[in-house]
Image (cartoon, rainbow, N blue to C red; front, side, top):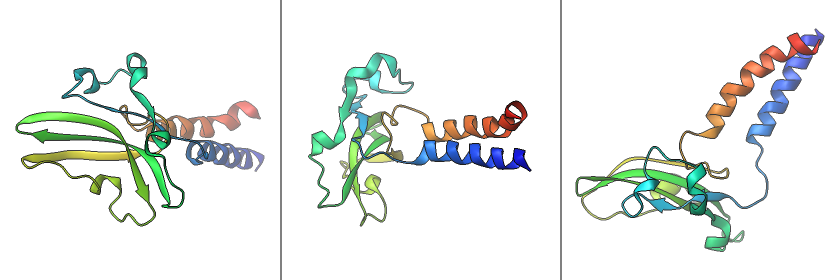
Length: 148
């Protein structure tokens, strides 16, 4: 019984650590690979620290408008050229389709994907929450074996 309680406790702490948001600014990569080819995929986070922007400072985010900064990454084709764009975006409680629906693109443009996230530098590549969950779950299951 004690092992089950410990397992549930560890899983709960891991879940909270991964998903509880802090009241700080979100920092995102801001670039486009049609201007800087190093912005495309695969993306090297270590060599691109200069591309990180404080999105709240950039926008002057307003709590009155109930907007919060998020990071956005999208890939689209313009005139037969694929372009990866990493940017800041803002969502409000009124958005039904999210920040990916709020931007206009020129004609002859086709969007392949658009994703948003709300943790620092999360628009670099694979979603960190998914990878963190994959790591936390086995740890929570194995912890009782080594703690008891």
